[in-house]
Each structure stands twice: as C-alpha cells, then as structure tokens.
Length: 314
Image (cartoon, rainbow, N blue to C red; front, side, top):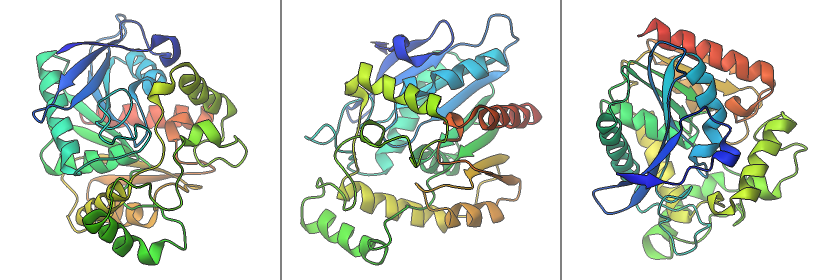
C-alpha cells in the first residue's frame, strides 16, 4: 500500500487526509482516500463511503468534514475505471468494467486496507448511486458494518423512454457479439458536470455545490469520466435485476431518495425498501440525485439523520 495523490486543493476535506494506491488481486490499481476524525472528538467508528459512477474521492471531502466533526473517520474509493484508478477501457473517458463482480474485488481490497490501517470500529456504510448497488451486493456478501445508509441507490437503471423496451436485448447483443466498449445510446463521451448548464441539471439545486464539482474537474480534468459503455449498461441491468430478486439483508438501513430524482429508476428503490424489515425510506422534497450536494438545509438533514442512525446502531 503506497501513497497516492490526494488533491486537497479541491477536496475541502478535514485535516490529515491521505490517499493510498491499492493493488487488487487481478493487478488493477484503485485509490483509497482516508480522512481522520477531529482530534477534539471521541472516536465513533469509520464511515465507508462508496461513490457513484463517474465519481472520485475528492468529491466527498465536505462529507468527510461533516463526519470528522462528529467523531468519525471516513474513507472513499476510486473504483476501477474512474477517478485516478486504473481505467479499464482504451478510451479513458468511457465508463467501463469487464464484470460487475470486479467491483466486489475492489470492495474486498478496500476492506483489507481498512484493516491494515487499523481504522476505528465499528464500520458504517454509505452508498451513493452506483455505490449503492455495489454496497447492497457487499451487504449480501456480509460486509462487516453495523448499519447502512443509501443515497439515491442505483437499484434500477434510469433509461431514456425510447430505450427502455430494447435496452436488454440491444446491450446484450452488443456486449456478446459486438463491441461492448461502444458508448451506450443516449449518453455522451464528456462528463455531465463539464457540459451541462446548471439550469435544470439533474444532480443538484444548489449552485454553490454545482460550482464546487465543476471547479474540481477544471483543476484536475484527469478525474473526469463520460458516459458508460454498452457492456457496463448490460452488466448493470443484470446486476440490478439480480439484486431485486434477493431479499434485503438484516442490516439497519436508511435510504434517501430525492422527490425530483431523474438519474436512477425510483420504482425499484421503493420496492426494495418496502421489503426491508429494519429499513426506512426518506423521500426528500425538492431534491435531485445528489442528496449530499443539495441545498444546505437538505445536506444538514441528511447528515443529522445519518449520524443519528449510526449512533443508534453503535
């Protein structure tokens, strides 16, 4: 485990942050960022933050600051194929993975590093978007956490209306018999935050957080990632369908979903949470996809409810 870059000029995280290169068993290098708790607070455990597709550790520097102030260490990971982890496709802007199970290889590698760093227990999971999909699968594989929180989890794929009837067949055919590294239909090679205007964007209603994300990619364009490959789409459809057929695990869980969500499919989130015996779904009024990047009142509510949830299951 060697030191890796951590772009503190744009992360806005708490003091003492460090990043490490982790080498997975298949040779792929991923990046782990760690921010310690505030020295003024008693240790309460470690938050394992699983980011979404296209994301990177620095995006969650402000989240680490929130948790540090409450006594929690926090880690965030650059999954294979994004951030400054090894990119899987020849086109470095293409969101691609060879197999969704590879993300669980990343999870296992991260957990080995968490143990090696001797980070404070107990552990708690936060999974955002694709990180919610990876996180739910990890819970089914007995991820050692006391409680979980999900933010707009990708338990179903949001698709353009015209693509929905043919998504399975089109993605399977291209993945199996064509070139699975082609860009998925109705997506773009450029990163969404880099090309979309703030007005009517699908991530946040907070102009300051939108500008925060844009500044990060201007300062460090190597963090940017564009649309997903056809293979990624097919594998994501297959994984979310599998998760939908699997009863929820027995982990106390709090799930946040914006009332104005337009990135992930919302119906599967409602269905999963209806069957989660010790789970609660919080539908956040006037919120888009990025609950942790939303307007100040929404962010404050998220962190307050999350810390209360973690403390209730310490």
